[in-house]
Structure formats: C-alpha cells, structure tokens
Image (cartoon, rainbow, N blue to C red; front, side, top):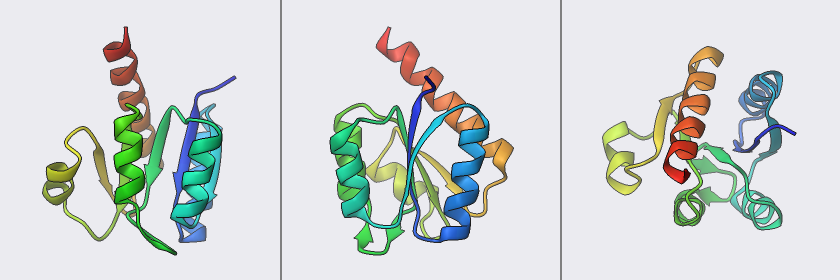
Length: 123
C-alpha cells in the first residue's frame, strides 16, 4: 500500500487535480477536504504520511490543523496563493510552501522530498 497523503483544498478543480497528481504517482489520497473540520476528522481516523494544505478553507484557516500535524511530525506542504513563504516559514519552519498554481512535477518533487526527509529523520 502507498503512503497516505491528506489533501485539504476548497477549490474543487485544484483539489481534484492535486488528488489525481498524487494518486497517479502511487500514493493513497485522503480527501479532498474542503473544510478544516473534515480534514481534522480524517487525520484523527488515520494519520497521513504527509499533508497538502490550502491555507484558507471553507471554514477558516488551517493553522490549527497544521500545528497538530507538526506536533505529530507529519510533513506539510502549504499550497497557497495568499501567503508568502517568509510568513509561513516563521510559523512553520519545517513546512514546504508552494504557490498556486503549482505544476504537477513540482508538487511531486516536493512530496517525495518531504517524505524522504521525514524517513531519514525517523531512522
């Protein structure tokens, strides 16, 4: 079974593109979740190996969820058109930030890089 990727994105076209991209690369996708409550519930049911998060979802911003994921050592990729890398790096220094729209190849490089880095840190 592939590694599990949580996708939280409220723009459905982008959400489905993201899910297709990571699924076609052999990952198991949890989502897309358009809201924080739905994404948090999915996280509580089964921890993902990585999360791709839009910052602003239907029911608010994802910072509380991101803090929970960070506390569990789950790598995060912020996928946003609203916040700067510097702004996010201040709050979440280990997270990767990609600007929307992000080409699929760049997203997969980030996903694979984050998972490899996490695996190396856990060994």
